[in-house]
Length: 297
Image (cartoon, rainbow, N blue to C red; front, top):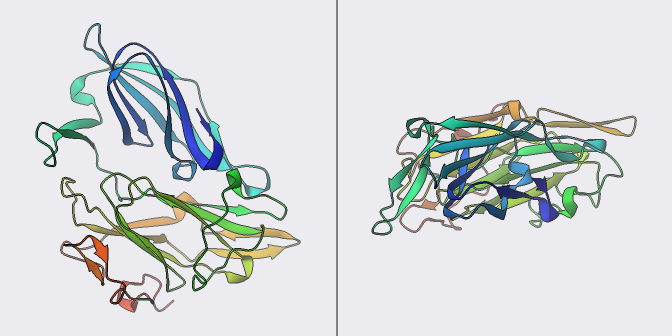
């Protein structure tokens, strides 16, 4: 397992024949009912990784129908120059698992007769992976060669040509999520049908402090949280300052982010549930004060 080109995880799996489920950080990613004993594949973007978490393979062995779990601890940590580094943090472990204790279950899929999908237990707290951010020092290249996607000139923090910079990104998850992002109170970007999409952005030190607010919703009708919205933001604005030629960032680590479920029935202004899209003429360019957790600060 490694973090390959363009910043996506790659895995090599081998074992007995049977039914295989590959999971990253508590979320089911691949279901292979005809696993032949070896497979190569891609995982989510590296920026989805926590500081420490489990990459798991659940295998229902063809020879006896028993489930076995194999897992290894891994994570995205701060390396040289502040650049993110994906590291395997332990040895591979295995254990037998009873079917009743599986962290997922097969649920009928209303989209197709006889179809199903895997529902994680417990359900993830948000329809996107929590953002990860790294404080890149002068002279460090963009991680994995992935340049930040600050194409919108109205996006308040415009990426510098090269670090120092705060580099951050997030990933869409299963459930056909829609999300919209605001940076320092202004519209920064949006996506619909955002399963497994990724983006990376960079912020120059002079553009701090940075107030990121992300609203996201599950839009797949089969999902048990269909139509619900969550709000994701750093508990305090992310601060950046240069000290002796070194960039110092605060408030950007995983523990600094908040996930707030919005009240049932909430719909983000300008989002059209029937069309599963944002109305560009009625979606606010500036985040309304009543929706901004930083309002009044």
